[in-house]
Image 1: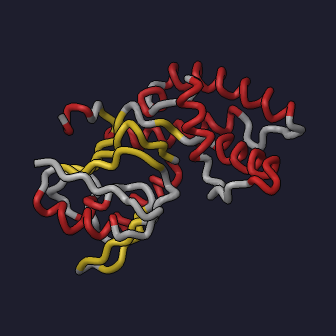
Image 2 (image 1 turned 180 degrees about the horizontal axis):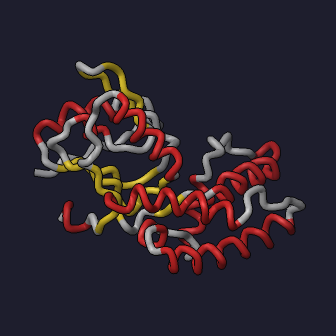
Length: 207
């Protein structure tokens, strides 16, 4: 049986709570899109948990939690969430990250801020977390997926291209890149090392 939980009231409908309640009946919980702009609150016997990236089924160790290919994931935020759960004795080995999910990089957050400033009165009130620019890169085919992140050669090649494009874009708008390519490689290579065991072709888990 398949159950879909979709918010139709622009957030704060209690989706996280419903997923947690219903997940006891299922073997897999999948989040199919979005990034760390979400805030799902779940309360159980271990206390109150606020999840920005991880599916709300993560609190049930018997449930496989899929982070789907429609997601855009900031590894730094994911690492924080995993660390917080581990510190509270919540097992986190039941996570599967789609190898086709896209990676939010530092220049996405910078681009978010630059574009918001340029919009003036038309600004959207973005969270500034780089989610929109990451999705734009996905559509433009210059995005970096988790499959690329955990492949050092692919990561370097794709980052070279994307970084050059962003550097030209930011320069045309009067801005310098606020993080060097070398810094990104160093930081994200460590994320890749830690997160690689979770990355897989999740289509086999949900079809």
